[in-house]
Image (cartoon, rainbow, N blue to C red; front, side, top):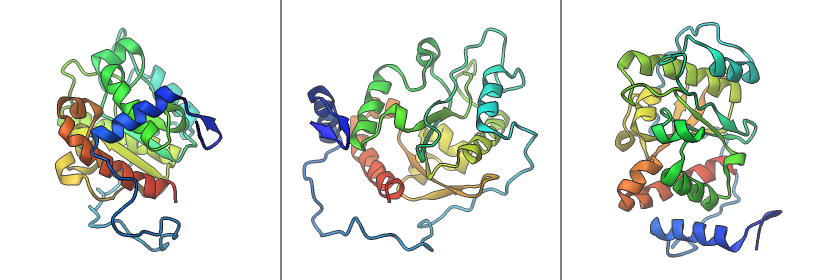
Length: 244
């Protein structure tokens, strides 16, 4: 079996089908016809947009993505930086048009050296496969590449990390950003997942506004599988935006 020009083996296909089943997908077509190939009007604006916070003057962060990534790996001025603290830095393809942003590494991520690892990572991989993606065809980053001692942000550290994330989003300049979970949504948009999901938002960057969609984190989906149907709806919105 093939997907595009890439082989898609039986195990991978079964994994994708299981994700669809968990998300409540039981038909392959909508009840009403839909022209998926119709280009969207160029003047289309996000439904019910949430006004972006006024852009603040950013410190002099590196202005090239590779230099910024190196700065994330080495800087001792980052929130939560400590000599022995592990860092889980961005991965994937910055030219892929899709950026996924989480809050910070989990303890398991710090051990594995990769964001969204373990059982949550396996679910995340199935979610990506369901929309024809892999970790190599997205750009995956966190608000903070370091984990805080409490595993959460204070108001001030959330503000600092959101500024770093806006700068990185501007350097990557993706077509869309997918925000996973409450902490990322609140830092970037000032809204919880429950308040923000189901519609498009915009994140102001030095490159210009970038469209953002909020969804439920893989960890929460594992804790509450009934939410997978909502996450599947969000992924459909994402595909429609990025692939057209």
